[in-house]
Length: 380
Ligand code: NZQ
Ligand code: ZN
Image (tube, rainbow, N blue to C red; front, side, top):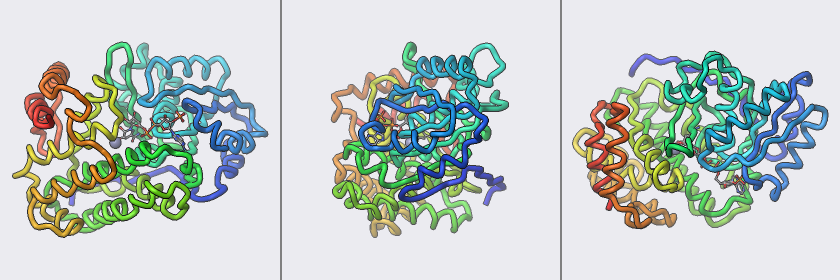
């Protein structure tokens, strides 16, 4: 096992009715920015619950954070933060709203001249940030319990991430009832995203970390088992609770402690979203089997272990096939052709971009721009 430091400062408040707990957790003397997305929270009662919990506070609202949140929109929110002397950000929505809150919280305190460098330097230049609380309404990203944020720049079609210990939420409310209103497509996306988060921290090579392996496998197994109920029974509280907790644990930094990590699927997938506008999880489902196929030899032992323990199959190839079948069972396509996107063109665009940035990814640092292009080209 590799050395590691484990620190997760986010307090999780889980269950029915927990939104009211906001009241005692946001300091009375701080002005609050109530950040949300395109309006789903106004249709499912979440908006009213948050407003009620913040009754005693001075609140400024900022709605309109889009899926794959835009840098340009975040900068508008930063202006509001400065004008209204905001001291606390309450983010209510899916991963996009939470990620936007993290960027706004960091950019509002940023002393450099160009906030875009927060993303170019992946957060290394973030020295402090405003405190954040969240109410999560879409289990998927794990943003509710980590220090990651992914922001897109509309003008240049870039999508970059940053990490900072300063942007972990102070607290996150996870009430499974807030997910009852999710469209089935977002539920499917959430299952796939959480599943792939586990994979990025698991599907590498044996690393003398049997506990991390078993924890990762229990998340994969649980996501697999709960998927049909989560997809088909929107008001099944227990299934939604299991899903919500699984997605949080998939990327709250715990299962990645002391083990090699990959993340090449995410890095390639972000580019596909940036160029073609596909949902985050849609791009993951395309890229993941391609990365595994390309790294079949290096990942063979773990693919076999995963295949045996989760799907009861023997070979690495069968494990890949089972995973694609699982995605298809949720009506999640796994090929670029399913979206009428030319794999050849996508491969060229992503290769160029990674070459410009000198990017290499993967647990062996061998997913070069050329390798990424080959992976994409194989997903016709
Ligand atoms: O904007 P509203 O109206 O709220 O609607 C949203 C949005 O249209 C809707 N929605 C959310 N909760 C709902 C709901 N509709 C009905 N009922 C509810 N309860 O769902 C749509 C998608 O929301 P979004 O927040 O974009 O989805 P998701 O949570 O999948 O977040 C995706 C973003 O997170 C990034 C992705 O790249 C992408 O930008 N990621 C963040 C990570 C992190 N912070 O650790 C890691 C991930 O790998 C990922 O990259
Ligand atoms: Zn993801």
